[in-house]
Image 1 (spheres, rainbow, N blue to C red):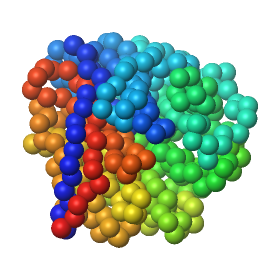
Image 2 (tube, rainbow, N blue to C red; image 1 turned 90 degrees about the vertical axis):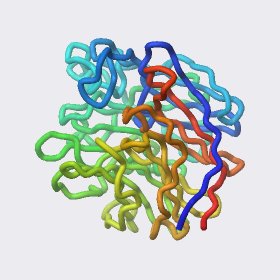
Image 3 (cartoon, rainbow, N blue to C red; image 1 turned 180 degrees about the vertical axis):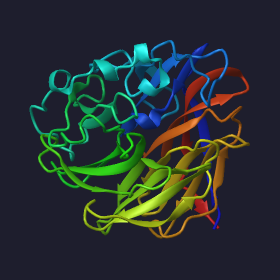
Image 4 (tube, rainbow, N blue to C red; image 1 turned 180 degrees about the horizontal axis):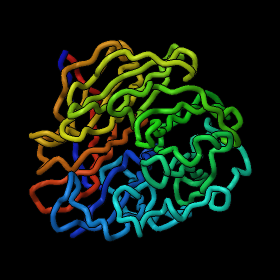
Length: 370
């Protein structure tokens, strides 16, 4: 099965000498044609010591961008939430130790208790998960906005997850079950303290408290991190996770029929995501087809997608959405389906026009399959 997409590519945020990246760590939300995404911004490095051409001696700070025309044009805005510990939000792994937030955060004093329940059914309320870093010392929390991301309340603690509170590496992957009922899919450390497995946490009181439901993946070689999840029409929770073992990088799918308590592996939608891997962005179309988007970090560098028309049982061959990246330092998409059924995916990118790492968006027509 082959999928074909019609795509329009736009620039969300690009600045001379800047490194803007990793929107998958934060999130994207929409209210009709109004769309907001959050990402990190820092400075370019002079030469890359690893995958990222970043200046680790300069703080990465959160920025958001807003579109009022469905993603065609964007305006940058400051992130107005309180960032505990330092200037960097969800980016300690990209700065030197003296700029890390983690060592300065005391959850008992720096994180606050959510005063009123979140109404997950209220489209005007959105939630963003955040963290300090990705090691076993990471601290995580969440924010709530009731005014379309013009302001963010928090940082709120994950009450009830105290045994995990100082280890979670939270990113925004939330599955609504009811008005005050939701699952939060959170990356947690393995026994050796390294990032590596996924905890499904549940709140049934609108975020006032959480319970640990179950781990998606038992500890093995490598890691399973950065899930992207949806609830299927029959109530099944379907999640795709970023996997690594030795020098192999791929995307793996899991299902839960009991709201996250137990999980079973159901396949490999993408066999290769390129050097160092890339996280998934999973969306469900109105006709129940699933679309899975990801950055591809081997030549030709770019953005790809696969499609399932049987609720994740089988997947199409990869469709290349763009292959004009200059190197592997790209991807980390987050995505949603607009009211008109088109997909918008936001990710970081690089090209031959300059060394900047910038935030891009692609607007995709619903795919055709053959």
